[in-house]
Image 1 (tube, chains in turn red, cyan):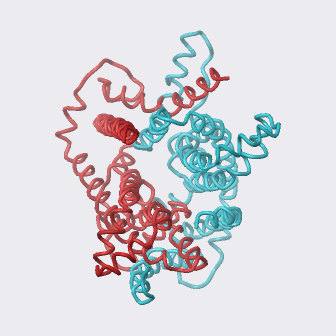
Image 2 (cartoon, one colour):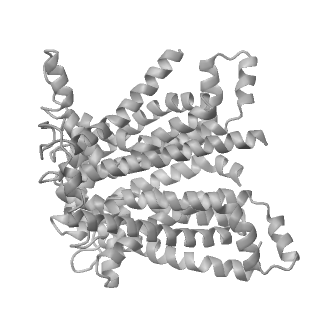
Image 3 (cartoon, chains in turn brown, green):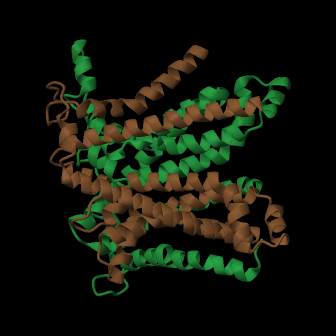
Length: 260
Length: 274
């Protein structure tokens, strides 16, 4: 039985990692064409740093990801604070409104936002992509923060008020530190969703502005530039190292907690 | 926590935001869907669903999305049960390994499946090595389903895994003490308790699978059209917004049905949380 379980886990892992293995292999492939192996090269990594279009798409992805995650986190946090005090029925109503962009299909969200932006006379480009990303990021932030906020004991906050703190001071020194893990999780999730989004960006971007995903989509018909494989490989290993460090740290922290 | 005035003040930004960026856009899409080029009310564009083979595309989308959702569900249950069993240190690393592929750009990894499945692809080269006949895998419905399962499996695994970890181990022990074998424990205890997670997983997989145009474009070879492809083409090639919006509105009917079903099943779960 135990053997079967291991085989099952291994099969799923193979399924999940096979395409990633192919992409990494392609980043070292001397041939420009997919599925044509002509030897090992590091050329694409070298060329990656000269490619201004990729650099521009990358900087758009990062800046839109960061900005949309920051704004969505602030808006989400304020909304959560207000929703905590609503009656259960109103809170449920509000939560279903906030969830609309997650539950709705990306293609519908993308098209409807495009219609709005064009109706408003907003030129499709960087700003419209940023606004669209905030729209779908806010619900992710709320989903992360709300459960922890609901579990929070409000007597600490009230104690701070009784001891003479202003509501703002009580908020920043009592509630905010308690919520830090979920705020961080919401921010990270929002950034990830923004960086990986294609469909909504596809409809809300104008000509001339590209994020990494739309740049990749534009290359699909004529063949992906191998520099893209090199970039994804670098990103993948960067995240892998980050995740491993995080896991090791957590394990150390756990041991530390067990000692005391 | 706050007085009513402060609370309402804090709610204002979101209300304005939701009105402008959630409500009005949906009104826009419905408006375009039910009007013609002279901005008169007309259902002609909605009626197009019965012409030009659009209905076939919709049927195919629903069918493939259903198959993918069922496969995701069947793969996730054993997977999540194994993961929850292995509590302790290992499980964090194993679960992180499941999240990690999400960081690879999904367009690129879906395209990598082309390299694996195509006529001269990796699987066929291996088959040839053993003298076996080549298989036609790319540009089939099966390839699209595979792409859907690959892309959306994590959306099923994550909610299911979270609800399974929340089940009190003592309940399972009690079931065993009362004489239930592992199959009975699964069907009568684990399955009902994990239903909320499974249902949110089903929505999270079914909706993107129903509405995708990327996976079918990459793995269907442009011959197998899903409803998403047709809508996308109306906007990027035909520039016929009214038709595109009308088809989107039809798609929204399915999404709303799905939402109603989920909230109906999710009710018991929500009350526990708050």
